[in-house]
Length: 598
Image 1 (spheres, one colour):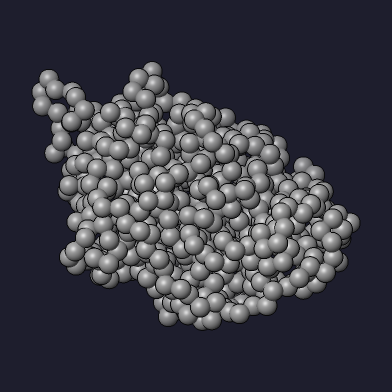
Image 2 (tube, helix red, strand yellow):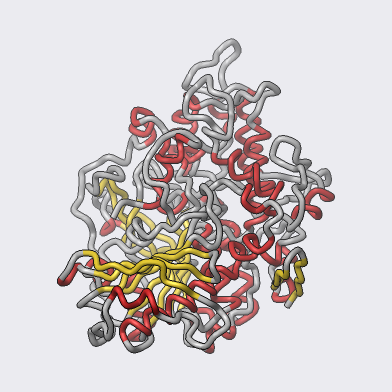
């Protein structure tokens, strides 16, 4: 499969400027990947040692689930009742056989409640009673099953590669491009669908579809999504704890509202001159990346934990009269420090969790830094600008547009209060996962330390709150967190990453064997899986240290403790929302929206 996040990033650069497949399960922007190849080569310096064969994850033991054969013809699904006596209606619009033998499947397309579109692929001869929902990234708006959204975080997962899993994807109830939120104008039903309810409705209907086709319900149900797909997954675990047995949540945009308002808008604002041109330009990024790597990178050039990095950009300040690609001007240094600091209000209080992680500077290209020197920051070349344009105007409320975009957003406490009224609808910050635990559910969360699209500090905040609520011992029995150095948003980066988290999750669900070490491979490019370096990652709070040998081999690194003195909790204006009482449920009746907090 093509990598969903990276293919969208390149495609997006014709909207946000270049181009491939629009399908993605991730947050949709892997911003480092949109840079010119020559620049990426420069940014990857030090990462291109001896190429390695892909490091295989240990073969996890899975349950021996019997192959279930269809009990009806694929085409006959067109007349199937997908409500199955329940309140959620589903209709099949097409059902056609694709291929045959061990690779063949019944390709089913349909709708939920007449507005949410889905596509399901049901194996003809090889179905082992496993069901996988694929999360939808960005602001969704299209069905992304072609890319699957599972290849990068499930590289080599045997049930998937051998067509033994029923898979499904959904557009979550509206049509649109990933950073386009205009569909939300005066459309509260679509807002609620994307916020949380559409994924559950699709899950119920498609499970009924699978049950009809094979004559039995799935034995094991799994979820995999990254970015907004990760956010959707956490809502499932919190609100609908029996929908899935195992959930793989990647780089979740937990603070959805704050991220798509203040976080992205701040990045644009602090790097913009009055005429819209950037202060920090693309030609300066390699020098910044090099300096950060030299100051804080490990033996293999990765920043293991940005919280332990105290690099000062003033160390690469231009001399008086100098302004070339090797240094930063005083104005550019100020921009870098503001980006790393994150948005604050008039009282100096942070409006988002933590700050921009040090070590992800290559990801600023295509974000708040246009990839071409001389280009202004615009909707077609800046992910930060695109994602913070429509959300505050259309998606942060149910009614008429607010008139607020990143062009006029005020970084004040009053603006924060205004734009976060629907935090409880969008943000999956409820730490009460006791019902999911009681169901026997297992949760694996992963996040890249170099992620500039969705802050890794929000994930640490959430996991800390869950541990505090359910207890550390209870947490360890059902959840694992992996923090991955050098990985950008949804496995992107100058050297994209691949790993298999899904197989260990399946093993945990099916045999009780908890995940431990996972090997992450950094590959040459989206089209070339040659492994440039590999690293082990362990469940947080473990990290790794170099123990000698080939710096690009996972075998040269061993488990270690996180740096002393770092905190897993990042205070900001919305930290109070990380509570069970902040969860909002809404129903729509015509023009009336009724919401209650649980």
